[in-house]
Image: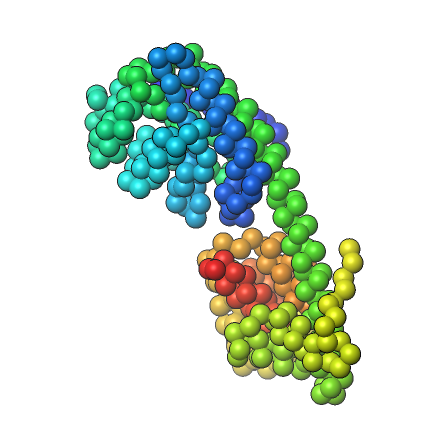
Length: 254
Length: 83
């Protein structure tokens, strides 16, 4: 095993102090990010594979504090990642936790993670290299590399994998930042639409019941919680009940 | 809109208790502040993001109507996540 304590950390931008859960979601839900990670796994596998030593590669990311296999170069790597997540322990998960590169040169000589190591050997794996992706606190992910040969990773391979993971991580940080902004924009646009509907409904209730805004809001909120229907859906129902508004959708233009 | 709570001491206690409950739910949950504020704004909320932040950190009182909307926003956002 190799310890890489001084992983390169770029000095750019203030690192967020806490992990933003919405960004963790993005890693797993954004199709762009998933496609990027799949590409990363395939590239890493083909870069490091040599005749006689085929490398399988997968990416595991944390979701709701639980690891999930999100992308892989092939089905074998995906199965190995899922296997490890099923056991809840293994070299890749340890690398993810410690945020350092971890090499298991020979599974036959490995004494840690026994249940997983035994099963992985049955799948024909002899050495494993796990390289965490430094995403500056936005999310946590690890690049997992499997080889069928013992001592399947030379020190050059490890350096190459780390370089690769470092470059991928900086691209990924940018993707996450862009996705975060577009997510915020979508939320805001949804909020503007919902606010328009609710404002109209409030006005309608005020006119109908000859009451003030707070009372109208109260009526709407009470109906929403009594029927267990979202506030904006109750509001939409109110608007539909106005003669002449039936069938028309609320218009909100950005 | 800020700190215009004019009720008596009993109301004040009740409001403090309600605020603690809302703040607890916020800190336990995984909803970022900006997401909560955006959703609350979408429901017709009038307080700005900084006031919401102050309210959730028990540094500011908001009118009862706003508190109701914050609570509704939190409920609807967490139900979305469970689905």
